[in-house]
Length: 341
Image (tube, rainbow, N blue to C red; front, top):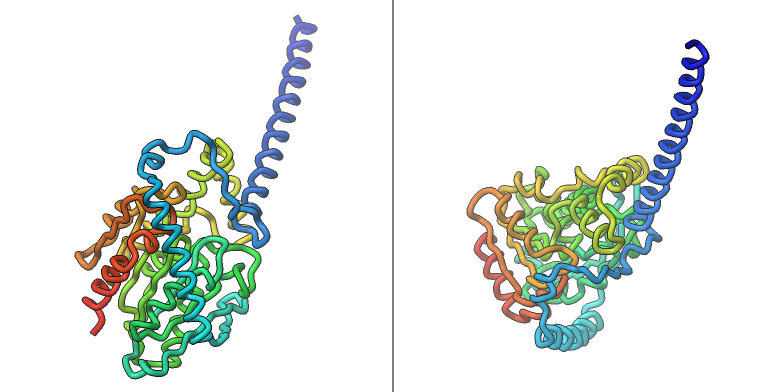
C-alpha cells in the first residue's frame, strides 16, 4: 500500500511539473505576443498603420460600399489636395512647439489669420492614427477661409513631435489642453473649436470629458471610436483572426507599464458621458475600420440636447468630407455657429 501511494505521489509530481511547464510556456507566449501587439499598435516605429484585414470582413459593411461613392471620394481627394497645396503656398504655417506635462516637445503648425484676428475664432484640427498635421490641411484651409486662426498639432509620437508611444487620444487629451492654454495665452478672448478625425476624433472626445476653460466652445468628432480597447479588439479579429482574450488583457497591462495608459481607461464613451458642451458626430456607413455603429453609442452617451449626428452614406473610413463635399462644411459651420457668438 505504501509503495502504491509513493507511485501516485511520483505521478502527481510529474503531472504538476508538466502542468507548471505548460503554464510557464503559455504565459511566456502570451507575454511576447502582448508585447508585440503593443509595439505594433502604439510603438512609434510600429507597423499598425499598414492594414490588411481577413476575407471574412463584416458583410453589412461591405454592402454599404459602392463604386460610385469611391469614385466621388477619389476625385474629391485630388481636387481638394490641389486646393490645399495652393493654400499652403499662399499661407505657409508657422512652426510652434510646446512642452507636454511629461516633458515632450510637441510640434504644431500655426496658420495665423491676420485679417480675422479681431474675431477671436480658433480651431484645433487633430489628425488620425499614424498621420501628422499634413493630413489635416484641407481642414485647416476651411477653418482659415472661414475666419479662424488654426493650430494643427502633431500628436505625440507622430510627425515632428517627440514620444515613443502613440497616445490613442488618452495621453493626447492632456496635450490638447496644453494647446488650448497656448491659444488662450495668445488670445484671452479666444473661442475655440476642436475638430478631429479618427484617432483625432477620439482625442477630441477624450478631451471633452475634462474640465476645460470657458474658451472651448464646440467639439466636432469625425469617425472616432468608443474606446481603444474596443477598436484594438476589433482589429485583432479582423487582421489576425484572434479573440481578445487573453492577448488584449496582457497587451493592456504591458501598455500601462510602457506607455503610461491601459486600453480600457482610454475610453471616448466614458469621456463623452461627462461632456456638457456641444458636439457634432460624423461617420460614414461603409467604415470598415471604426464601425459606424459606434457613432450612435457615442451620441447616446453624450448628455443634453446640444448634439447632432451627420451620416455619410457610403463613405469609407475618414472619407465623409470627400464624399459629402461642401454639405459636410455646411453642416459643420451651421452647428458651430449655433454656439459661438
